[in-house]
Amino acid sequence: MEFTSQHKKSFFSLMNDLTATHTEADLRELIGHRLLELLDADHFASYIWSPHKSEFESRISINMSDQNLSTYEKHFQFCDPITPTLQKRRSATHGSLAIATIWRPG
Image (tube, rainbow, N blue to C red; front, side, top):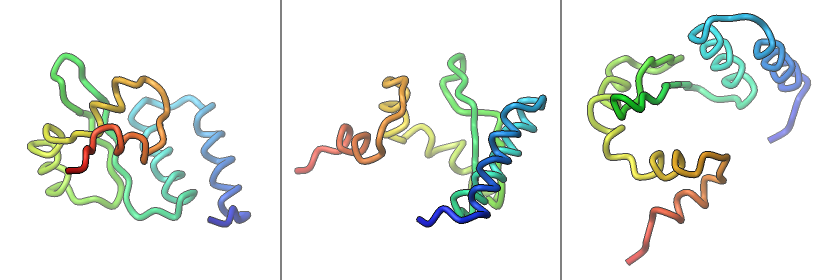
């Protein structure tokens, strides 16, 4: 990926948003828009883990259908083998390492 002047502008806007005063939900939405710009992405979704309910909640989404995300919330979040593995690590982990940790061929 080429880091263009527009990417730089998005990156510095993201840094600026992180240092400004926002509500938690507003900040997550602002960051979502910045990440879409920065990564040339089409979709963004953010959830907060609830240890009391053992599920993700407080959805923020951009360019994603409510129906698709509701399906995720009702079913797929409970049969996701990668996220619980990553949550146990409590640090950034390369995606291919996470998949290798849970996927056993054969």
